[in-house]
Length: 98
Image (cartoon, rainbow, N blue to C red; front, side):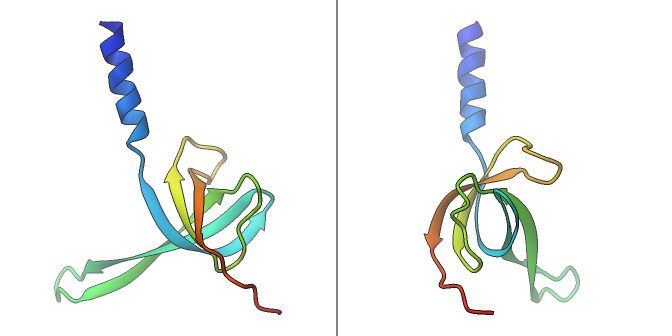
């Protein structure tokens, strides 16, 4: 009976959310802010509205740069705001001189 419970929990653990977004800020050591966009219909007029959500992502190796397109995976809470970790960098952006 315990084996079945362990198998079920392993299946649930591996079924994690995966998002793609763009790095908008490098806030601190091992942390980046990623914005991902999505569209929802307006409740009355049914026109599609663009929305975005900003999430804090754990970047263990500090590889991400501003403007990179990244894939993030849901994980356990790592700090007060971080619930996501970096899976891979899809496209690396060239940083503009400021």
